Amino acid sequence: MSDRKIRILIAKPGLDGHDRGAKVLARCFRDAGFEVIYTGCHQTPEQVASAAIQEDVDVVGLSCLSGAHMYLYPQVVKLLKEQGADDITVIGGGIIPDKDLQPLYDAGLKALFTPGATLESLVDWINENIHPRT
Amino acid sequence: MEELGKRAMAGDVRAASRLIRNMEDNMPGTEAAIKHIFPFTGKAHVIGITGSPGAGKSTLTDEMIASYRNKDKTVGVMAVDPTSPFTGGALLGDRIRMQRHAEDTGVFVRSMATRGAMGGLSKAVGDGIHVLDVMGKDVIIVETVGVGQQEVEIINHAHTIIVVLVPGMGDEVQALKAGLMEIADIFVINKADREGAARLHKETLSMLQMGKFENGWIPPIVSVESVSEPISFAQSVGVLTDKIDEHYQYLIKSNILATRSHRKATAEIYESLRAAILAPILDDLAANGELELMVQKIMKRELDPYSLAELVAEKYLISHDCLKV
Image (tube, rainbow over all chains, first blue to last red; front, side, top):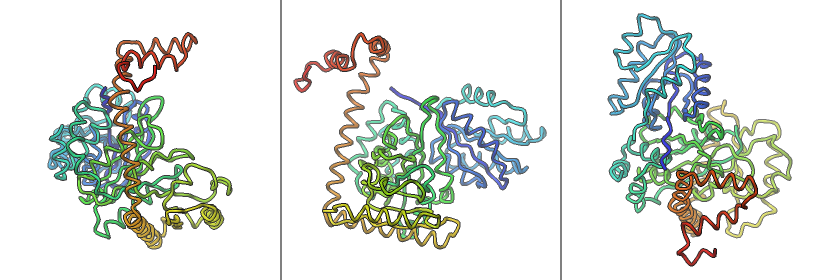
C-alpha cells in the first residue's frame, strides 16, 4: 500500500540569522504530518535549489527577513526551473511589503505569507494545494 | 519505474532522489526499478555512523565528505532522523551540517525519516544504498538516528561501522554492555577536548583489551577534538578516514567482506519476504476491517495473539508444508 507523504524544505536564503520563524514552521509542519527538511541559515539560492532536488521535496518554503526577498526568492524559482524541477512549488514568507507581493507572484512564487498569517492557514494551504507527484 | 532506474544509473540526480522517495513511500512498481539496478550494485564502500543523539554524527559526516573529496572520491550520504509516533511527521535536520557540499556534483545527500522502523534506520535505507551505489558513488555514508544501546540494525547494511562516543555518558560498565559497543569497527571519541575524554578513552581501551578479536582487527580509537578548531578537526577526521580505508582493505584481504555481504544478503531476503508476504496480508486485513476486529478480540481476551496468527496463516498460507498450523 503506498504511503505518499508531503516533503517540504524550509530554507533561509540570504544573510539574516533570524530563524525563529523558520524553526516554528518546521515544527508546525512536522506536527501536521509532513516530512520537513531544514537546512539552517545563510543559504545561497544555489544551495537551496540543489537541496530541494536531492531531497525530492514537493514544496520549498523560503524565509527571509533581511529585505533581500526580491532577489533571492525569484532566483530559487529560476534555478529550479533551469534544472528541470519547476514542478516543485516555491512559497515564501517574511516581512514583505505589499508592493512586492505581485512581482513575486509574477516571478513564480505560488503563495506568500506575511506577519499575521496563522500556522493553520499555512498547513491548510499546503494540504489544499500540494498533491505529491506520483 | 524501470526508466527511473536507468536514469539514476546514468547519474540523473532527480531520478535518483525520486526513486528513493518511491521506495520510502512503497509506490507500486518500485520493485521493477530495484530489479533493474540490483545486478549493478555492490561496488561502493558502505560506512555506517552511529551514536547517541547530539554525539556529533552529522558534523563528522560533513568533514568526512570533505576528506573523501580531497581523496577524489565521490560520496553519497543517507542521514536518518526520527518520525513522530503521533503525527507521522518528521523534522530532518542532519543536512544543516552538510550544506557546504550542496553544490558539489560529486556529493549526494539524502535525508530520511525512520517511518516507524526500529533499529535506528529507515526501511528504505537498504534500497537507498543500492541507488547511491549505481549512481557511481565510491563511498556511501549512512548516518543512523541518535541511538541508545540496542539499535544495531546498521550492521546489516554497512561494511565499516563507526561508533561515535562522547565524554560524560556513563561509567565503565556502560562500555562492557552488549549491543552498540560490540558493533564498532572503529570508535570515535568526539568532543575530545571536553572533560572526561581521557577517562572514556581509557575505559574503551580497557573494554577492548578484554575482548577477543579472532579476525585480527582490533577496533582503533580515534579522538576528534572541537569542530571550532577547523584545522585540527579536519586533521583528526583525516586520520579517521585513513583508518576507515585501512579497515576496508583489511575486509578485502581477510575475506571478511564476504561474511558481511552474506549478512547483508540475508537481511535483504528477510526484508523482501516481509514486503512480499506479510505486508499484503496486513494491507488486506486492514482493508476489509478484520484487523480492527482482531484488535478488539485481543483486547477483550477472546483470543490470544498466537492463535490469531495461526488463523491468519491458515487463511492465507495454508497450502504450504513449512507452516505447521
